[in-house]
Image 1 (cartoon, one colour):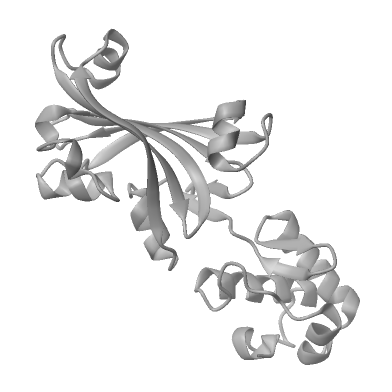
Image 2 (spheres, rainbow, N blue to C red; image 1 turned 90 degrees about the horizontal axis):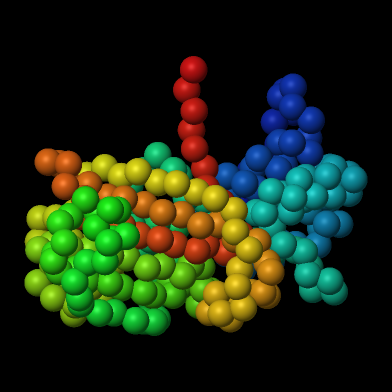
Length: 244
């Protein structure tokens, strides 16, 4: 299918340069799913002919989208829609919900799950007293068949009926018992993956990643989860909307 059938014509009256118009049109098509992850774009000469622009215009548009992680160039194969995910920092949602919103299927591989007595560090993070029982869940999170994150969650035992309550989505399990968080605090920092983390996520040891710690709260202020996630830096973007 011609690219113009998916993104429409460029606006000849717009003050924006044509390469910016083309880049924005392709970006919008990716956001609404008209250009799904992994789809190949037509060759640059075909896009230029189809959109009635020069190949230089097409190259500048695609260069910008590659730089921002929306497209990938593969030597000898062409240009493809990237598998990167944009995660809004302002919305409290689960990994499964984020993937479903993009038309991707989320699934997990279990690394470990256990029940035990809260540790001093967990007690500090959760604000729960010594002797409290907690569930611990560690999983590799996938979007379609791509590993995206290594995630460990700690949940007080009062919030779930048992370890088996968590299947695909922790938040779905918490919602079923009336303990889904209504607000959260998140902290983000850059990390370098260890050899073990890199192996789990299909990247190279020493590659850059993102570490996110989220504390989720019930309406009465009780902490109901602490989740620590190691996200692939080449596959995930965190986005925040700011207001003056």
